[in-house]
Length: 230
Image (tube, rainbow, N blue to C red):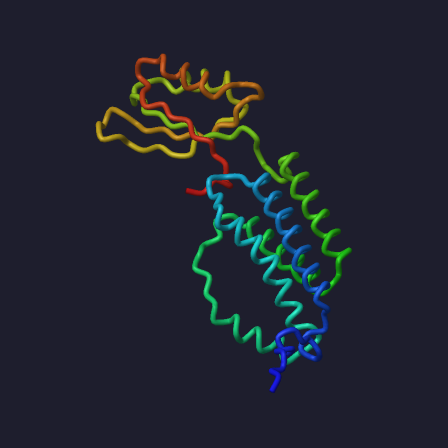
């Protein structure tokens, strides 16, 4: 008796409405566009919170969503079944940069487009998102300040404010007092200023000039970028 070949392993029929070449092309396109999104993310990322695993997550999400969309097809029942199955997944990694969430949604959208054979939409969306991300990164769009720093130093109480403020004004466009804290010694005070440096001025020049004053010590300048995470 001749054994029947397991054709059910290669049958789409009413289960999936995509041909084999279309499935492979959908997944390949999702992977290629995933590389585009991760490349743009790496190029435009700012701060100290870059994670290789997050970039890989974007790549895998793009492919997985494409597969999920092919599985769902036009079946409402499969859609609800998949929602219930995926609801058990819990992501405990904290997204440190809100822009990272946008890349996750981009991967989801592109995966959906590729998985449903909307090839032009998938490619066009990837290109538009890439151009927008690179353009906003290049022009530093929506940044309030380009040269903002936090200046901290310890000074004698009897030391005249006009002396160090005169030096600060030589190098800084704006200077706002943020914090005054008495040091352990009652004769010393810790000062904290918000400094907006003048263009083409090296912040190290300001700290070096303040260090020359005998009654000022522990001069520290920190880049005050709001998008840096620790």
